[in-house]
Amino acid sequence: MRALIIGIGQCGTKIADLFALVDFEAIAINTSKSDLEYLKHIPQERRILIGESLTGGKGVNANPVLGREAMKRDLSLVMRKMNSVIGYEDVDIFFLTFGFGGGTGAGGTPVLAEALKEEYPDSLVVAIGALPLKEEGIRPTINAAITIDKLSKFADSIIAIDNNKLKETGMDISGAYEKINYTIVERIASLLALIDVPGEQTLDASDLKFVLKAFGSFATVGYAKAEANKVKNLSRLILKSFENEGLYLDANIESALYGLVAIHGPPELLKANEIFEALDYLAQKIKGKQIFRGFYPDPREREVEVVTLLSGIYESKSIEDIILTAKRYAQSFIKAKEEAEVRKRELLSGLPDFDDLYP
Ligand code: GDP
Image (cartoon, rainbow, N blue to C red; front, side, top):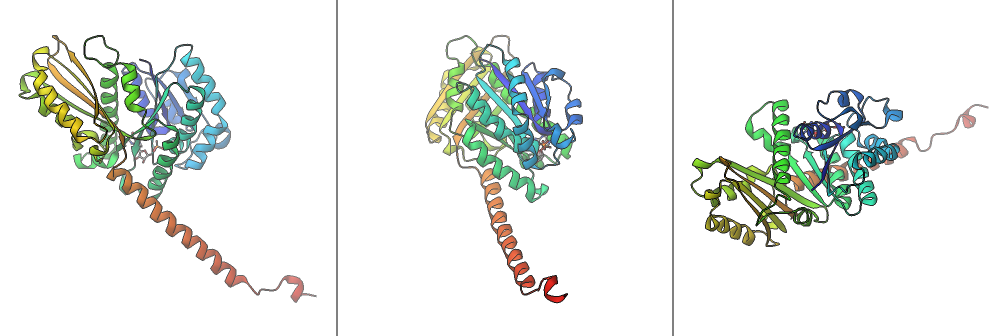
């Protein structure tokens, strides 16, 4: 299976750079020249500066209107570079990584998602975005809400990571960002590493694409790992992988349509009864009742690893909070703006022109 990671904006390119570190094909796109230079693992020729004529390479200062314009102006350059990286072999899934609350990522990602869908209709476009912290204020929340709406029209799935979940760890902000970025990469990389591996009950690219082709709804990736000698009951570890704390998104997993569970570990631990107990429970719990499964017994392995993907989710408190806050704010702002216009007109009406007073 071929996955191409495309990072957009500062948050997105940092995450894409980590994917490059673990040998994924990755591209970085940004309006800020210095942020692009700061990356460590993506080769120079795969770093694309956009909107230079608009911002002089200085970034868009969290303004998504500029981010969108920058991507639109340089879309043909981006698609040309993309084509040269892709070559003749198809890409199964484009993963677009970005921060929902900023400018380049929030404004530019939906534009790129639409263009990729048009140019590569057989490939999937999956957005992986970090939701803003509540403390960041109203603008990142609005940016996130509008970007969610736009992306839902073009992306096949949106994997949203709620940065607020990290506050619970009590870490400082840059440490927390680093942790969440590593977590995203670890989970997606572990999942992709198990696709198309030969074996009996395994998952292939078409299974993963089936699960992620979910009309722009939300998806979330859970993960659990334990040393083999500490696993008393595998069913518990599987359940832990899709419990809330593992998923970095407040979501009602019962609203999911599809699930995919991949289990990798020493053969003597992958006991059928324990696996099926957990998978039956999960299949009953989610609305769509469909679980794709892959078992990867590996005699060299000393750990058991479970990766869970749930897709087609439409009930999420993290997302609802953002959308409702943005809607409330937009309504009151538009009302205040209209009032200001009326007051201005009332105040200024009845004033004469210069000619009325000066002969
Ligand atoms: P852009 O460069 O204009 O797209 O803006 P950013 O990428 O800096 O996006 C800002 C948003 O992303 C804010 O809401 C931040 O909370 C979030 N963010 C910024 N950097 C990171 C990061 O490294 N990891 C995570 N998880 N979120 C980040």
